[in-house]
Image 1 (tube, rainbow, N blue to C red):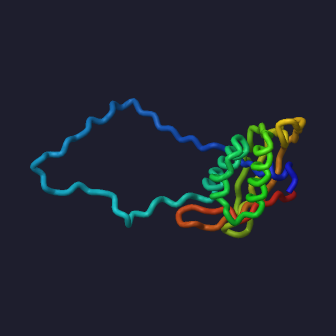
Image 2 (tube, helix red, strand yellow):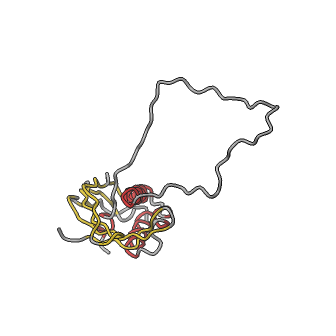
Image 3 (cartoon, rainbow, N blue to C red):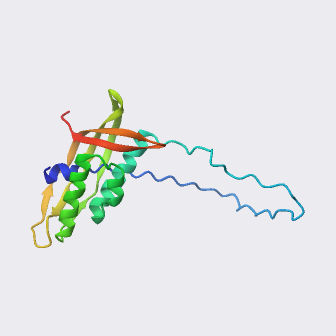
Length: 172
């Protein structure tokens, strides 16, 4: 896989949800020591909320960018253990960092995520920032222009989440 494709697999749009409130902090209630009724607890039968495919793709993209920024491939590999192109990308990132190289890239802006005919396949249109990288500590810096690129990402359900099965750059 070419470095361009390997580096172009980075979808990044962080989802930051923050809540603000001007209400005072609640005062903890101390249970009455004479009470004999047990307090309700969460049961193991409660099911966690399922992650949407779109949220997973964005989380996967965050892991991809983090991998390229740090060279740490484990969290990214966990999101697509059977994905061949994902493994190739992670292998390439490991090679670059093991040789003392680096990747400087501001990620992708996801323009759209749509089902691509099947319920587990998605067409993702992204705009990539330019990339600067060097393959080893003494290698010259190289540059990739970036730009708009469509990808197909195939997912597989995994409990309340997903795994990446396949990714491919496609033509518009």
